[in-house]
Image 1 (spheres, rainbow, N blue to C red):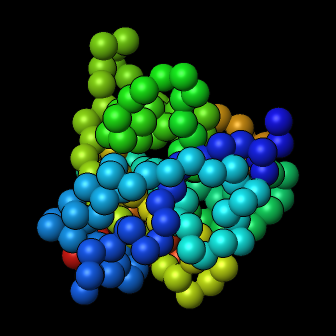
Image 2 (spheres, helix red, strand yellow):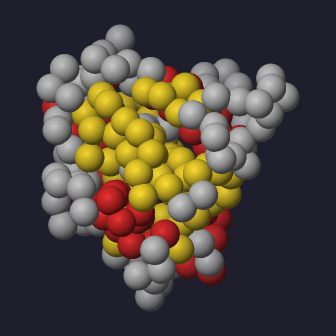
Length: 208
């Protein structure tokens, strides 16, 4: 099955925001984000990716994970061999991808989000753990939304912050497709060819 044939999770744009509310750029977790999460849970829908990649009336959900270690953040750069051609040579601090339903399994929105986020993390990176029982502390950090370009117009990011302890190492899973490592927030902010979502999230982390 090709990517365009996969079933993904999203929401009709007109159901995403309450009247008078809108997210432009990064919005830290609070009342606006919580209301969006409620509406996502209530109005989430499944569509084939080919049906919505060019349809701005439908917003595809993207779990977008920021991996932080103290004052550092994990940054990647996608190489030319990466299958995501639109991201070639771009720097990013977000690990994420589309949400997929689990056919035949009824689970709520929060669990579906968690399962997809864990899948993306497992596919993209290897995070050293202290033991098999070590669970990564995480929290919803906010949302990111840009409608000014064709890609942003059809996606919305649900931003999670993942905390790893000092000394814990993180490596990319496929070094032929991307390279990565921890950098300071200031280094991340000044990285060339930085993804729009990443730039907005870094400013959110820095309180700007």
